[in-house]
Length: 256
Image 1 (cartoon, rainbow, N blue to C red):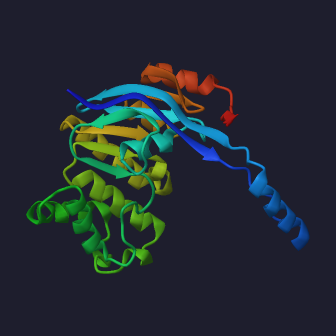
Image 2 (tube, one colour):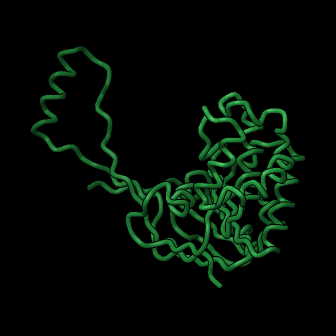
Image 3 (cartoon, rainbow, N blue to C red):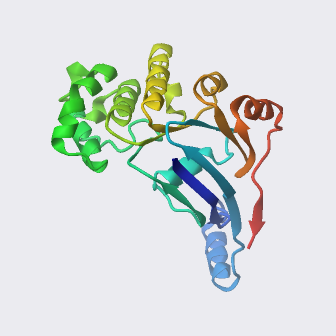
């Protein structure tokens, strides 16, 4: 069964070059007046272009690439944080995402309240969340801070709780960005072990990381992005070999 199907996905942004900010008041006034009569040139920035792939049930699928290659943009589209400009992405089942430290948490709410809030967002009943509550707290190791507002948590505490919530509340698809790099070695090891177990139980995981050792350990297949495009997709070792030999590139932009 295909849990994730992405077809010809594209995302771009129209950027207007910023006007000169320094100079005298007169120069700024003249520049503003000119902008009323002279059309500004826009630049189209292509974050993703014609990306397609499929991920099966119970598969851990790696997504790698240089900085700025479009990895985080792809996960934001899959988690419905932003919408694509073209193409489509179909995810079958409940989706939990961990895109950055504390994603989805309300800073004024306590850890306990945020756990239940996250469960409700996933469509779970209160009794279902209560069943998983002790497991979440044990994994995160924040027992002594349950009734403290999350805004007072350290980045490591927010990461532990966020991962524990995403991993332990019932979700068919788990989207994980490079946030595990914030944690220490022991916690990262614990997270990787948990993802291996989740995959064996039939959950699908999309794992974005620069840690090629972790990707090699967890994934059988991977996707390599370069400048928003698919550079390679296939067995994880082949994709990682291509990643190592890929030159550092920059996104292209087209004037409109």
